[in-house]
Image (cartoon, rainbow, N blue to C red):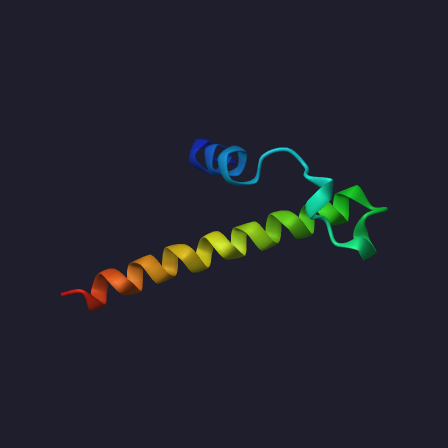
Length: 59
């Protein structure tokens, strides 16, 4: 894992947050945290994509 990926993970994801876990996965912390990480990563990707597209349309 690169230092940049590690930095983003710790900044964007951080420690497990059980209050954000879906109820169906709450008894499986590995699955629940993985789903939370995926959701946040997907969100970050969409935000970065939106920012990239909006920069292109401003010209």
